[in-house]
Amino acid sequence: MHRVPKLLLYPLLELLPALGLVLGATSAAGAGTAGASSSPPSSGAAAARAALGQLLVGWHHTNQPVSTPASGIRGLSQVQSDNWSGYADTGSGFSEVAAKWKEPSVTCTSTTSLAAFWVGIDGYSSTTVEQGGTLIECYQGTAYHYSWWEMYPANDIQVVGSTVAPGDSISASVVRSGTSYTIKVTDSTNPANSFSTTQTCSSCANSSAEWIAEAPSGGSAGIYPLAHFTRWGDSGSTVTEGTTKGVISSFTDDEITMVDSAAHVKAQPGALNGSGNRFSVTWKRST
Image (cartoon, rainbow, N blue to C red; front, top):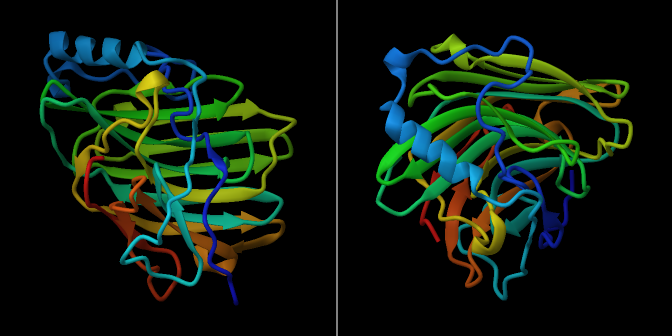
């Protein structure tokens, strides 16, 4: 399939377009309560959550074009973004997206930094997004891992689990039936972080499907430093467009490299495997 390289100029609304996290219990069906034995120290965890809660709600970063192509980009369709890295399929009538991964570990410094890993429908070229995944927050030198979901703009990020840990086996999916979207994240290593929730959206575009590592945004701070995660390996990726079920490479796909304003690579996606359902994202720099 011939695909023309292009520069991503869309507003990148989607993973933490709001990053105003609703902290504490959520209404997600099947959501568990994190066990204290696997939680970070309660005082530190509370402070980390409070820091997230202070981020502005509803603030969206607009992607800025870069002057030169980033070095090292591979793939037929090459797109640059200042806060996304991974793959996006484009088309119409998407009804399912799914993937599996091992939660990465992270090296934290005293600087607050964030990294999110997710699958979703919409958001690449639309103002709606239906998504779920995991989030790493480095706060005062300590790493905190969460599971979450979002239906933007209907609500803010909904944090469910706070005991996700490096190496946990994660699977995530978004399945649409008509105007109903079932978002499911399963942590088979620490099931308290697992959930399934069904939400309704009659105006969602269903025009793309994504597998993304993201540097979240927030308020006047703009894009937060990208937390220094070990390589994120996305596998078992499937997608359904219309009545056709396939893998990432089955449809028109864009390979997205995260760069800064000077075209320095921040996070580099690897090429798809031969089956078109697996890739990895390598951290390069925080800012």
